[in-house]
Image 1 (cartoon, one colour):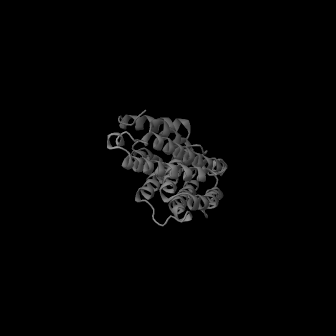
Image 2 (image 1 turned 120 degrees about the vertical axis):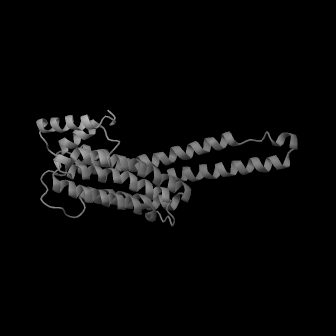
Image 3 (image 1 turned 180 degrees about the vertical axis):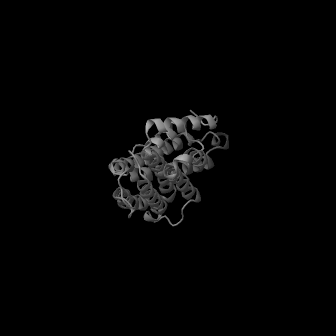
Length: 242
């Protein structure tokens, strides 16, 4: 239903502009410059944007259970790295069951818009969800890194699910950039304690001391050990934003 709203509004946006052009051609020249449908077109554009964001939010909601499942994986006690985790399969399944229909109903322009907004939502959400997990062991971080790369691949592949023959280069770059932040975070968690601060500064230069402290907690460090590292970190990182 929402896709039909988008398509109808798209049609009305286009035809209202054409109508204005045609009317301007047949009326007296002294009135032709007064024929303006831009306000009407703006209204249809607003309808399109709102409808597409409703689609994005609808898919976002479906990810809720997978985000919770990710935090419930026993990352601290995993004994080995295996195939991608079940929550990744869930994310892939949601997209596989949702995207094809949207790709077949929306025009290429607005399907691309949908993809851009979906990636802009899921990428940062996945990154922040890592911080919601409890203690992550080295094996757990390696498994989560594998999962992160799998989610990135899923996002890069979804345009094809919607039969999008050409993918905007900006979309691929955006997905890679956003998911690379999660990969960088996990590489910091995997780094040795004595180099975790320098690794954090190198891989996440925009990170905050609060996020760095949370990483130390994810690594399972005791409060006393955290304090010494934090003091050294703050001493050598005057430019880091608080």
